[in-house]
Amino acid sequence: MALKLNGIFRDRMVFQWGAELRVFGYSDKTCVIRCSLCKDGEEISTGTCGTEQDGSFLVCLEPVDEPGGPYEIRILEDDIGAYEIRDAYAGEVWLAAGGGNMDYPLARSEFAKFIMPKIGKTEIRYYKVPAFGHMNEAQAKAEAESEWIDVNSETAGQMSAVAFYFAREIESRLDSKIGIIQCCATRSTIDNWQSVESLLTTKEGRTYIRDFDDAASELTPEEYDKEYAEYLEKYRKYNEILEEALKENPWMTYPEADAKLGPAPWPAPIGPKSARHPGSAFECMILRIAPYTLRGVIFYQGEADTDGHQSEYGHVFETMIKEWRDVFFDDQLPFIFCQLPMYISKDRKYMGFDDMSWPLLREQQQIVAIDMPNVYMAVIVDCGEFNNLFPSDKKTPGDRLALLAEKFVYGFEKVDAVSPFIIDARRGEGVEITFGGDYLLLNLTTGFGPDDSGFEIAGEDGKYYPAEASVDFDGKTILLSCPLVEFPSKVRYAFFSYGPTPLHAQNGLTATPFQVRIDKDLGGV
Image (cartoon, rainbow, N blue to C red; front, side, top):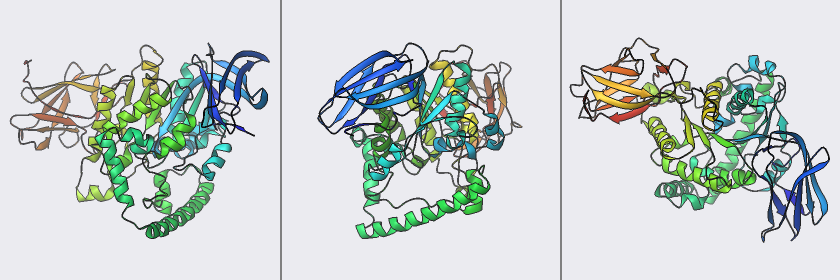
């Protein structure tokens, strides 16, 4: 067949209501493509286009003005029937993208064995974009076999746990099908998720490219081929053992698997066959689904960037969001992401060494959320696990992403979505900090002592000391004291890779980490 649709166009697909329906693919000949949207045998809308010089085509149909279905989508090539997509629904479509924490399957998440049997039938469907770093025969085969899946107790297990809990909350609010496009690459860095052309536009992006090239040059082609073959064999054996272990215990979390099997082989040697190279996930995954019309994006990624690129992350993250908005034809596309949780490796914890890469990257993420329109950050700093990059609690991140969507995308009122964040810091007898956000009262869930408050104060010498903390009578101000610092000039909260995060609002939202200078006295301006 000359005409071929991109893999996302399958039976049971969910397309975004209230926005144009875009159907795209490729033809190996010059022709006219006609697409029709039908319901109950009646043609609702049609669109036509010709193929471009490279064979690609894009047909745009008028928006459906309300959620519902089922619809049929018929695609003709020079008036000859080529495809018919059945059981399609107009609904809410969200792209769930990122690294291993977004990819983490529901069946292996916390309490899954109790939750999954009670899921029953839902209005959620999901499509999983095949994870590849190169366009090859394996990628083409995986995409040809991909499908939209109705989510229920039997099928939910392999879906992203974060995306499931996000969709479940949105589903409870809306009378609509929820379509999740799961697009994840475990251990990916932010440069994987945008084009090389985009990376070249910033100094920070060029640093990512240069560092990858430098790492790839450390091995000769012969050395690389040998190490890569050995790595693939180790990974194959590990997956065989893991599959057998999951047959015995399908609810096994990642830490439980590590304890039973040892860690998965990683990292792979860097070279020409690397699946995680600059632009890889963008070229082989994002461009396979763009410009599918979306309501918005949820995103969880950044762990791998703490290994030397924490200072460049913010600029490259920002250019990534801009490029995604370009390729999805929506310059205001809502983008909601998870700030990194707490993490430190066992080795670094026991050595007492914190290189501060994780708090620095969290700070970069927060700057992007502040600076870019329609970008919102779910604070999950209270969700980390010691020595575990992949925390098993995925309900908290999913729920907090959903709250932000309900408030800022869907416009629901009386939704507490914005975590407490610092507004002001002043010197008094100690330090007073005022917080904003969606809450009534702040709570400190510790004994308020300096070792577990999460707060630290520094003088002009820049050396930080733990501070005692208490909540003032207004419920929105934190009072700090630290006898070791005579004249406080800086204050920070939860600004470490791993440590206590006791400050929460009464509604359960955790406070946003920060570090700031104190530039005024109590009562000053």
